[in-house]
Image 1 (cartoon, helix red, strand yellow):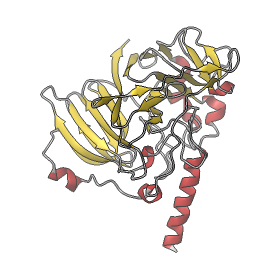
Image 2 (cartoon, rainbow, N blue to C red):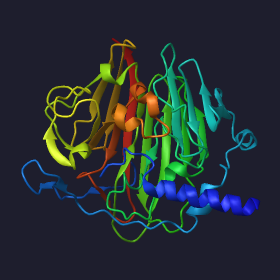
Image 3 (cartoon, rainbow, N blue to C red):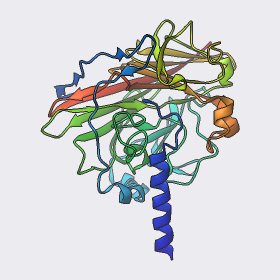
Length: 368
C-alpha cells in the first residue's frame, strides 16, 4: 500500500512538472570558449513573434524519476568531514534542508533541493528574495528565491514530455567545495546529480558576502555541438509590485507572452502600469544590456542586478487575476517581481564539444 502511494505521488508530480506548474514558463568560464548561435531573431510580421534559433531537444534521463525522490548527500555529517568553514552549516530554512550562511557580511540559505538560493540578506538589510508561504510538498518545485532553469527555459525547443524550466530545479544537489575568503565572503560550489543521458554538465558557484554572485557553468561533455537555454529565475521581494519600477529596460524591444509572443518596445521604465496591458507582465527582452535596477520606494531600497554572458532579461508578475489561479501565489502576488538573468528566446547558447559557458549574475542592495 505504501509503495503504491509513493508511486501515485511520483506520477502526479511528474504530471505537474510536465503541465508547466509555473505559469511563468515562457518561450521563457573557463575552458574552451562557447559559441553563441548566430541566427538573429526574424519577425514573421511587423510586431510579430520571433522565429527562434534551434535548440537541442533533450530527452528525460532514465534516472530522473528516481532522483526526484532522493535526498541530498550533503548532510550535517558530510559537512563535518569537509574542512570547517566559519559561518557555514547545514540545517533547515522554512522547512527546506539547506546550507545556511551566517557571517558579519550577510545571512543566506541555499536549498539542497534544486540548488536554489532561497534567502539572502546583506548585513543591515531586509530579505532580498521572496519565498512563497503556500509551497506544496516536495518534489513540487519551490516557488521563490532563485530557481535554476537549465538546460532549457520554459519548454523552449522541447516537447511536452519534459518538465517546464529544465531538469535540475527538482533534483537533490550536493556541496562539493566551500571556503571563506579573507574579506569574510563565503564561497560555495554545488552540483546536481550526474545525468548519464545528458550531453551537458552543470556546476554552480555562489559567492555570499555584501553582494551575492551566482555562476552557472555549463560544459559540453559530448562529441557534438549542443544548443541550450537557461535562466536564474529571481523572485525579488518588494513592498508592493504595483509601486516599484525597473530601470535599464527603457526603449528595448521585448516579446510579450501575454500577447501571443508578439514584439513590442518598452515605453519608459518598466512598471505594472503599462496602458497597453496594465496590472501584469510576462516579457522577454533579448540582447538586453545586463544592468538593471529594481527601485522600491516602499522599502527605501534599490536592488541592482548585473549580468555577464546572459543576453536575456525576463520580467514576470502574473497580476491579481492570474495569481488567484496559481495555488502557491494567490493573494501574495504583490510581494514579488521576477527579474531574471538568462539566455532564452532568440539568445540560444551553442556549445562546441568540450566547450564551457558561464552565466554570471551579481545582486547588490543600496538605500534610496
